[in-house]
Image 1 (tube, rainbow, N blue to C red):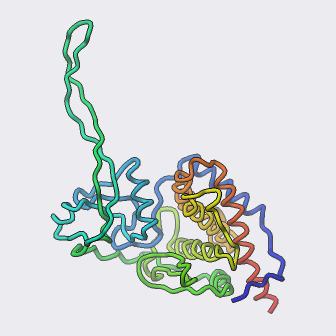
Image 2 (image 1 turned 90 degrees about the horizontal axis):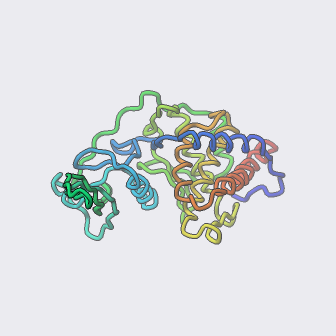
Image 3 (image 1 turned 60 degrees about the vertical axis):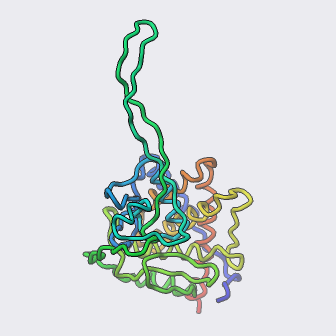
Length: 307
């Protein structure tokens, strides 16, 4: 669908600047843990968990496994070593690539005081590497049934009309949300899979996720032509994620879905800012690109109303 380029874009710099500042403030206060807005095969909380012990990974392992799951498109936060999966009756598929985690072991060591000659017991820690596989990389693992949504998604006519006017191709099914550049299409989980979080309703989660992917949809050269490789190099993917989440926050405010940015937005953006920690201006660059994407999408609405 051709973009109505002849129609002047509607600018909302004040709203977008205010939302960006609110998100930054939330991040500075501590954004907390981010949750997937839809239920993913029994492990809705996107905090990496160990399949054997059931414990959550901590420290740098959370970040590294989160990035691995995001980049490689895993639908679950459950991880285990090759042997741990075997012990559960599952088998890692041939050719699957493992992800690295670090854990620490303690051992007792004696210390001798050079001046007094006294010997005392002490504890030492040393780091060890381990390699884990996501549940999506194994066969034979039976996932628990997803729970029934208590507060199902309610349709918002204004938001649905906004999304429809863009002409974006959107399909529902599966347990992932993503924009596929090769097909120029958006894939969403079924609406029934969306659950509320402690800070957001299922309705807010659904539309925020869809608007996140719709912001990605504006990225190709024939639309907003977003390219971050020259400045951000290997972190271009993370930069695009910042743009998409800020775009979702802006559009939620524009459409009255959530008048203030949800803590979920701040937590998600905080994760990607950590990836981009070398550039403390990244969020402002992302905000400018997100505002441009919103203007692009808004122009479709202007033509629709005029017609």
